[in-house]
Length: 291
Image (tube, rainbow, N blue to C red; front, side):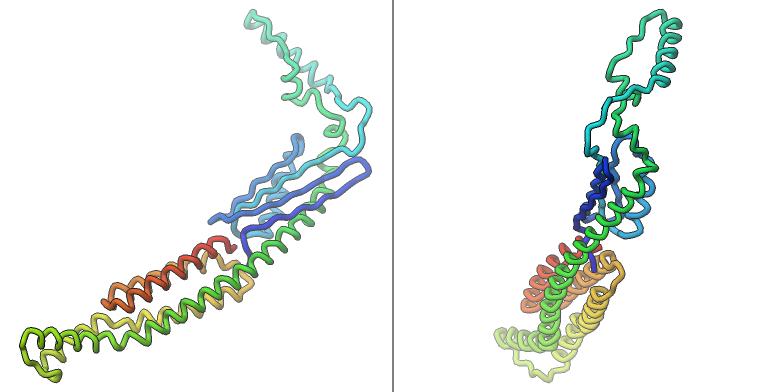
């Protein structure tokens, strides 16, 4: 079981460059990968996504890659003269057609990559990719390791809370058979208070209690709860991503407790159901963080 929360960082160096890769993850219902790479290295995006998608199945994962030059180079900024000449020619033609001068700003040279740093120009994406891939996989390993450690803590927490739910289920199952008995006693007491002498063996009393017992029977819900708890434990012990099926089971467990509360018509069971649903909500909050 893995958490969707994690962080990993790794670096790779050449004699002139330092490549830093950071990966962070938070919970999300679907898989969402955001990649941030330096200008001029956009072609890494697809490869980075492919590697990360192979390692995660759920959550929002952010990948940040930076390339830093370790030493200063002569002519740190350089001019792409061919691109500048082509741009100037286009501007002159446009100026002739419009009859208005079209000045060229320094910001235009930077935006169009006509003026670039020596680091960007000399370290091509193809040359840098093997080092980036190495750092990415190392960061991803740390990221997955942290998610696994966090997942182990989540697993221990939700299974502990599931044991509490099991105790509520057992107390509900233990108390349920006494609900019709308490109804019969209450009916006889009300009749006695009204000075109506009716035997406990009276057919009308027996029929009324039997109808009520059938209406408030919660044995099926108790059995289904036991089955849901077993499935929950099985999923927690699986190596496959379990977040979505666990979330579904939480919804089903909630429905069973809700049905018990509405059918039982008993104050003791009602209090047990409220307490169980409160504990279940704690489990649901944790399940939202499980991959």
